[in-house]
Amino acid sequence: MTTTRRAWPKAILFDLDDTLWPIAPVIVQAEQTLHAWLAANAPAVARRFSIDELRQARMALLAQNPAFALDLGALRRAGLVAAFEQAGEDPAKVEQAMIEFFAARNAVIPYDDVLPGLSRLKDRVLVGSISNGNADLKAIGLSHHFKVSVAAHQLGCAKPDAAIFHAACKELGVAPEDAVYVGDDVLLDVQGAQRAGLRAVWMNRTGSTRHLEHEVVPDAIVSSFHELLDWLQREHG
Image (tube, rainbow, N blue to C red; front, side):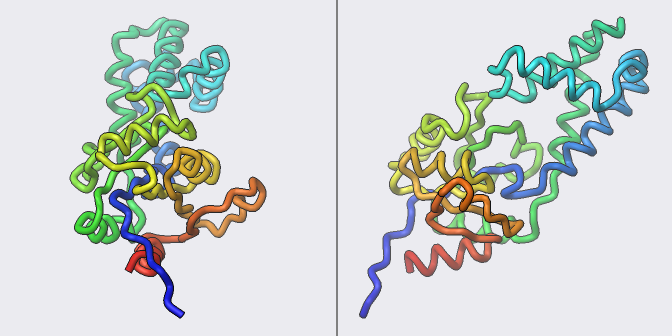
């Protein structure tokens, strides 16, 4: 009995944070770096607000204006402006504070399998990214691996909205059914992509069973780029 293999997808799109690199420790370090910069350059802010208090203030701002969920950078900037004003510091310094934060936020370290995997894929399919976050692939040094990069804060909509998946496919010139999306979040990435007409691979690096809770059935579950490439080869020859 022969197994009919599908044609290779024309494009593979990736989520960024927690799919290509771990993000939680990076954000912790970035917030510590920012607070140290505040202590040196806007001491009244650092004295008045701890890292946790700045975070709580941002969450309050987000609750008041849910549109900030589309641009976490804008949310952080607004939180800093408010903190500077309350502490009596010059809000003109906020932009430099944001530069310091983003430099640290983009100091990510890809998982070991990512760079070899991206290099192999680039020779076979179009590669793109879709992110709700504000990672800067150029600053990180990975932009040359991606034909397109679509971000929620630029487009004005976020995963799991089908529009962001369709926008990336349109930029690549492929139909959704000819694309595969790879991400770590069962609902935002896998369910969102499938509802937009793409196939979706769950990058489950932690061995989670969260897909069972939500009754989401990924087209494949992998724990690394090695397993992703094996699945692609197995399914598509």
